[in-house]
Amino acid sequence: MDKLIIQGGKPLRGELEVSGAKNAALPILCAALLASEPLELDNVPRLHDVATMARLLEQLGTKIVRAGEHMTIDASGVSSVEAPYELVKTMRASILVLGPLVARFGAARVSLPGGCAIGQRPVDQHIKGLQAMGAEIHVEHGYVTAQASRLRGTHIFTDMVTVTGTENLMMAATLAEGETVIENAAREPEVTDLARALTAMGARIEGAGTDRIIVHGVERLRGARHRVMADRIEAGTFLCAVAAVGGEVLLARVQPETMEATLGKLREAGARIELGNDWVRIAMSARPRAVSLRTAPYPGFATDMQAQFMAVNCIAEGVGTITETIFENRFMHALELQRLGADIALDGNTALVKGVPALSGATVMATDLRASAGLVIAGLVARGETVIERIYHLDRGYERMEAKLSGLGAVIERRS
Image (cartoon, rainbow, N blue to C red):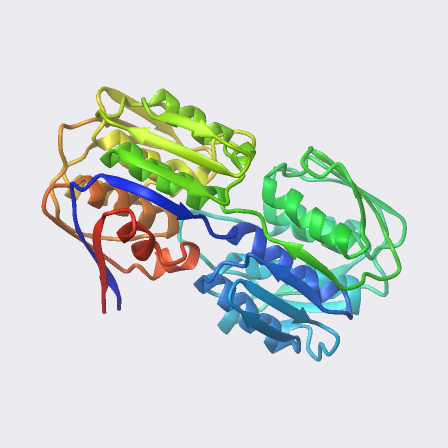
């Protein structure tokens, strides 16, 4: 099992290109199931989760050709509508094949998903929405089974804001008969990027990026070409690394307009931020100031950036309060940060972080994807050697992180 070895204390300087967004690529890959013509994608990140989704789609009968950041998915020969547990168990996003399969083929059998152990992420809103569209659904033996001759447009109000729920229902509605309205829809940029891909395929969608999405169903979707948006979480992670350890870095191929909450907190921490149309430059020459934050659905502060800011707060001046409102079990990294010398007090869904002058290297264990990123940031700033074990979590969402950091001057290596 691979691990990262970090010699901390080196400022980061230089330029790097941000990869395509994992959380946009995964639903768009599933959208290829909606058409009998190939979907061509650019800027697809090379990640473990993307590879897992590709294997799942191939298991269903799609043909996938990948060349670097380009991927072509041909779903003209789909021969199965079953997503088995073996492929679904490691990645919650696998549930995103449910809507496209039942919309185009009238049936689906999808294992209940797994993923990071950060809390319950139920699929009840997916099921509720599809049932409202006329699907007959049963949940038994760990599988969701759905059938429908053709889905019907309807009015759906989700009980909670759910990104994958919004994406699943939006994809299903593209081939439904009539108009579907999704109220309380997720507003994340990744939802908007999926809507752009679907529109290129011939879907008729209004309101993506707002809490009310209207989909006018069509008879069929066609092939198209789409470029996956930049990964705002990867970009934010590298920005937090500079804020913690100091230096000056320019991030290229980013979309700053999707990162306003993160950029605002970085400025509050004392970072100097410059923005262009597709770049962000950060400079940090002093110890950061502690910031307080509360996670919330977009455009609020992203839960996927919480662990990274906790790492920054660990060595900041002052005290920061972090409140997690999305997942009930997303503070597991706090205990590992304490092994590096962090002063963190947990009280339910709130963490009180008192900054210390320095962290000290130690062996720590990654507990989930974004926790891994927070530990990398802490390792970059800690004195001495930090060993991060179980980094397979990191590979699910970050493309060649150690290589990118090495290019900025970090002393970091991967060992098996």
